[in-house]
Image (cartoon, rainbow, N blue to C red; front, side, top):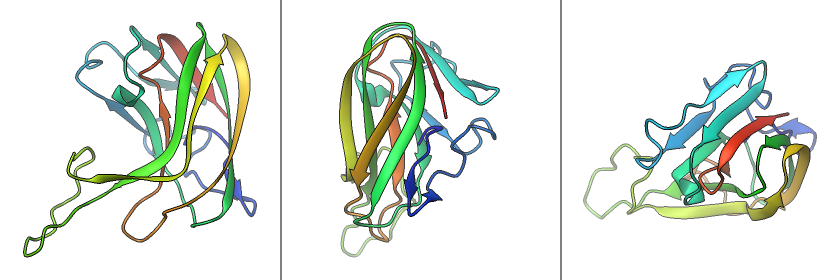
Length: 168
């Protein structure tokens, strides 16, 4: 997800790892707790956001679709600049829609709680990320990837407080 370089067999898996298209291909999930108090911005290839209070990581998430194959090894590399020491969770996942017998399949809602979260290999909490620009590299093996799900790389920002910047 992020402006990282995620490679398997030398192929980039993110459609815009350097934020060249701003937030056109990146999504930012902002739940009620943060609505009106955060404004994600991309300027010169750097994603930035100021988070007023730490809460649950999943309440504020930067994410991107990722082209991954099952049982392949990937590397996610990105640089982050924080103004405070914070933990951050990185994940690859999606929700698998449950379809009840005899019912038509509805358009998939992003946070339908009836859907099952499918973890796809990366689910790591990195503790004590310190202030200043730091490079982070996470290597993981993909799993549970099928035609029923769309892999996403996610950076959970809701557990952090302060200014966060991300670039490749």
